[in-house]
Length: 299
Image (cartoon, rainbow, N blue to C red; front, top):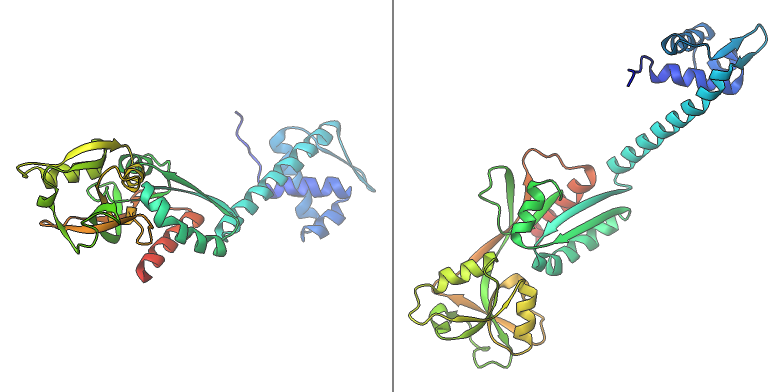
């Protein structure tokens, strides 16, 4: 591709002169002297190696090449104006698109409140939510598919910045009619021999559960397995068993299921905001990130 050897001012000078068919009128419109305008057009013609305008003492007319080039020049200027307007819109948050990767429990119980407030402040910004497993959230942020992520893993990744938002403990989820539902706490040892509803072995939550019960003489059995916490909660709701779940997955207003804190040991996880250290967020993504941080700071 041949390198462009003229600038925007020269292109604009040609278009305005062609449209007004007068160097004087074009110079007035561009706040230039007539000689300065003429020099700009001449530099453009020299760069292209062709005459675009025919000058007479009374008028200015387009050559055949100039007529064809005028169409392309107008399109180029219009496209540039549109690009500048789009950037300006994003800078002032009049439009844009943000992609957030998060674990399903965050998508269900954290993001709605954040996005409601964000939508009021920036109604023209679109948000794409990737609700996936913790591993997939981490990958989406690392690979740049998401602007930032919300998860409880990633703090050990040197390429990521992990900003802690909140801590949540693990609870034993059960139907409110269960005989343990009135307890204030339940020891892990009490789970010996129980048939549990669990997430799959690919889940970070399952790893924590297996570590916490590894020393029990009669460890609980994962009788039912689901890929996601939401599925395990649904099975508990259906009366098929108990499940060890992070508190965030179980809203306190749930009508059927309650959660009792597990102790000896207490088990917690930290929810954080993940962002690549080498990536500067765009205005819309940064505005949403700040909204997440602000709402958790006041929660």
